Length: 588
Ligand code: ARG
Image (tube, rainbow, N blue to C red; front, side, top):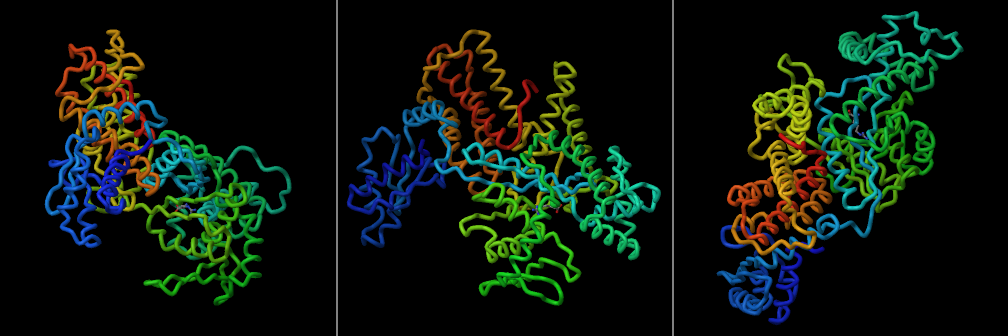
């Protein structure tokens, strides 16, 4: 199904051609002046140069040719040469009926499905998942869902950090605290215990302690670095400890991600790419891509057109150790082998943007991927507190995501204290609403921008917030339940009729933007466009709802049409929220 803009453009372009001008001037866009018209065409202004005619004259000719068309309620030329367009109510209602009947409400599925790997989440094992990881998870989840909705084959990979210094630090601290553990006995050749020697709570205490201690004690830090290197070169006891760390952490991470409504198809880890490193390094050397620089193996990635200095991409340190870079490049090799993707999208803090620029250039230069493969970096900004600094708890610590969810849910629950609902229902609803408050508060901002985490505002049931959108959906659900109770549900073939009022038209216009919104959200990796859409639609619908007694409407045809429109609105809103990774409760 085409967008309204495409349909209008076709008709206006034909009129340009009929008047003797090139079709390309019939480009239509949303109106800059919604108070005057809904859409506009500025083609005559652009065509004036080519045809040496006053633009208003051409605009008049084109608008004149379109006067009899059923598409328009009004199409007029305005000085100096704009064509202002307002579509007819019949055209708009027809469009609604087509949407209601088409796959994905007219959005359809792509004819060219791509295989897309999305690298998001990116938590590090052994460290608690904190609010810093929140953004990657929820933005990535929405990008994943949107691409999948359009028919692409999408593989979401959590790409856990499990191969760095944090493991060495934990091993070192454990060795200090419990030197008698069998993992440290080098003469031990038997099986290691199944039970981990620590809990998640232990790890959460051990890691920050060891990390802090290492910063003040160079010797301790060296010990941790050595432990990391020994792990990476296959120390049995350390590998067994590392496996315990992964098992304990992953169980915890699974719980938290699932609470966030975030799902991964793959639980791959940095360590999974390690087997690909030796061949990759040999290849880069043989092909002459990599050279030694001060003992380190590097690939130059700077280009002549660079405005700023792009340092070489380091593949191996001078002591032969691998780096974050090496792992990311080897992961590209692994992904190519396993999935042969058309696109890889990374959803990572924008402070890593230079790093990813190096990685992408290096992967291209060394031909780890075919030239057509797209590598996309979606860098997100920082979540700040009201003081404008990175979000912290009141006592200044890094807040655990679980606690944040808990806090927000409790605040929502308080707001719902006066509801006549049983306690369990309030609890379930508050959890869904709290999640919507957090996720929507984040997603409604352009990903690359920093934003202020404002619980007060995010949990408000009014304004551009998650709870407000859910409230609109719940309102429609309860309307439809009443309709059903009163046996008023319209027949399947009941059509949506041309709108009678301005507010009804606004609902239809908002709905009609569905296809272009989903496509833009996908193409630009921009979930905030979905948020804009649901907010506009909710706002339009609530105005319409307040202006009309839907169930009380006496004329059966109109009542049925309004119910159909309400249902379409509810269905589209729910789908859009699903693409944002959110669900509405039954009541709220
Ligand atoms: N674990 C990393 C961090 O916490 C993020 C991983 C991002 N993905 C990647 N392929 N490098 O910063």
